[in-house]
Image (cartoon, rainbow, N blue to C red):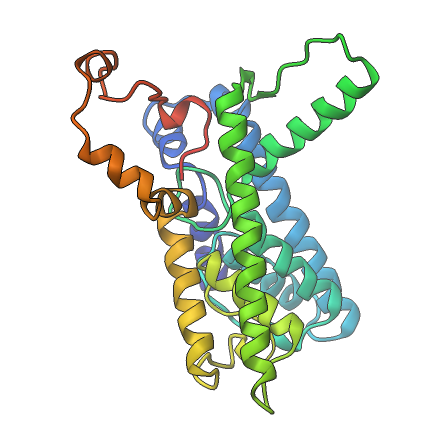
Length: 284
């Protein structure tokens, strides 16, 4: 029962904090039922738990209630980037391992304390891709991208796509660096293990796969690998785009210039392009 209780708490913690407040305090049940991100989050948790449970039961690693409990706990822990583990999933089969890897990329809801990409960004990218495919068939059609009934503007779409591309780029560079450092070591980790380590650290999940799984440790890795993984954890926690902006020389030059009065007075928040995070659900 304790594991089921923790599983439920992890799942609730992965929900948007503002949505939790509106649901628990303001009793906005209908608004929560219309939240497409929340519904997709729940579906991914159920499907991920089901796939892992079926793999455990089919492989004989656990049976009946044990397979369901371990499958659900690990799937929820990984997707919410909590990092807890009740068993060593490094010894599981291919389907369960790939499912956990996919959940590392999914993340929980925007506005929660979880890491990774977040469900709403995947939803926006899917809706954008579907719009582009439909517009290829009907070039003159006006097809706005909507999420939870709200139209997603072009600026938000660009920011979501930019974040996704930078996330994949950083992941690829980190995996390549880990593979090179592992190749220099005779007992280095394999390619899948380095990919899992990069994904786990960039998403702030914690345990990875293979010898870096829940029963293992990152201690055997070389110094270069630890520096890379530390940088990935930092990027994943403070977000890639703000750090990339801070590293640009042009940003600091712009900050050194005196602000134009017309620009500073045009927005109540001191920014011409200010957009509230909750307007598109892309916070976090």
